[in-house]
View 1 (cartoon, rainbow, N blue to C red):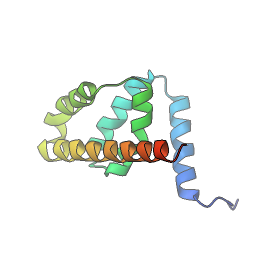
View 2: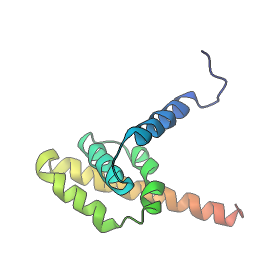
View 3: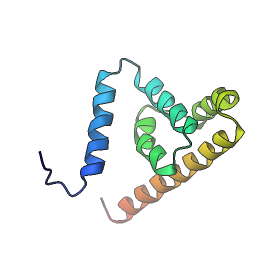
View 4: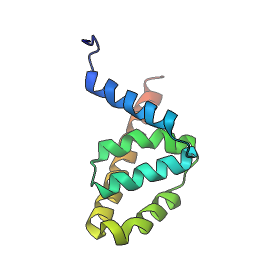
Length: 108
């Protein structure tokens, strides 16, 4: 079944994420924290964290909660992965802020 979308990979990832969320019985905040832990464990790039910024903000999650996740998994995944995750989370937040500011400036 061919797709006519200009972003078939992104569309597929979004569909997989939506399906996962629909089938998961976790509370939204716990789901986000679990996904952040998994991203840190696999040393995911900043763009992977970016997909979780908006849901985290909707759930009123705090930087302290994100730090707690990194502290909790540090003995398992190691210092290098935790520091990499912290850097990537910071980069993702910076991108999200820049996009929001651009939208405000453009009257969106």
